Amino acid sequence: MVLDDLGTSLRSSLDKLQGKTTLSESDVEEIVKEIQRSLLSADVDVSLVMELSDSIKSRALEEEPPGGTTARDHVLRIVYEEMVELVGDSTELPLENQTILLAGLQGSGKTTSAAKMAWWFSKKGLRPAVVQTDTFRPGAYDQAKQMCERAEVDFYGDPDNDDPVDIARTGLEETADADVHIVDTAGRHALEDDLIDEIEEIEGVVDPDRSLLVLDAAIGQGAKEQARQFEESIGIEGVMITKLDGTAKGGGALTAVNETDSSIAFLGTGETVQDIERFEPSGFISRLLG
Ligand code: GDP
Image (cartoon, rainbow, N blue to C red; front, side):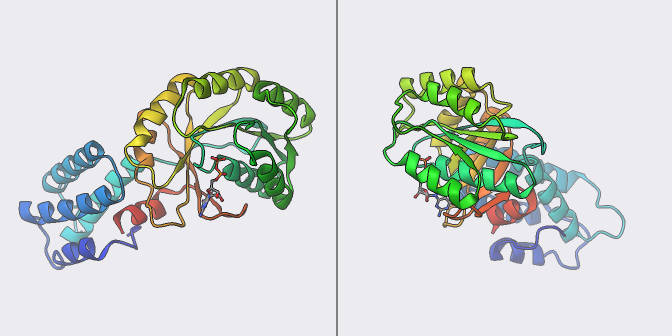
């Protein structure tokens, strides 16, 4: 089975089914309870957890296990399939010329993620450039420039220009030789009207192929409103969850994925440019259930 890293309580509930060929309602209840406990503590939204629980319960009790399948394997397969449905596939990212716009609140990890994504595309044989339009956060320019040097990718920013829209326009012209443009934007501590106005203007100039929302793994309920506002203003095609090297499991980001009808593109797993992984459902599912 693809899930190799289940939490001990869930594993022991499943192990109780060893040798059984049919599932009772109480067997299923016990397993679903363990799953709920794990997902809620991983910050997955309550209504998403309830929907998932209902699907697992009804499928586990109604579907006939295929011949030769034990009750344990039957329920485990259903849990896995329903979890895949919940977390989704990774965002499609063709390895070709494209412009990616990054959105998110200050501190979510946008600037770091811009350089990481550029590094990732460079390893795929493309020539990426980062355009830094964050004129709001002191230090954003230097941080982006240094990280892009470390990633050995093209960079454009202008510390003497305080007009992010103008920087975006000039930046795309100045880095015209690159195949993949990653445009970093300013965040704020909270969603404010001027942040939304600014990113809409940048989006108008940049005309991105896809906009990605950068979210801290520790985000909980706040994900919903953020995702909704960015979705309304620029449209969100994918999410990057950062700081997964910490203790947070990133379940809150699923609310954003659900709200924007999008998917997860990348995971951030540390502070250096190489600490990026393409999202892949089974590892993330094991982490949520672990
Ligand atoms: P921005 O304000 O959205 O541009 O956020 P930054 O890129 O400046 O990141 C904020 C802080 O989070 C910085 O200290 C980064 O080093 C840190 N950070 C970003 N991504 C990760 C990650 O995946 N893991 C860890 N541990 N730290 C991260």
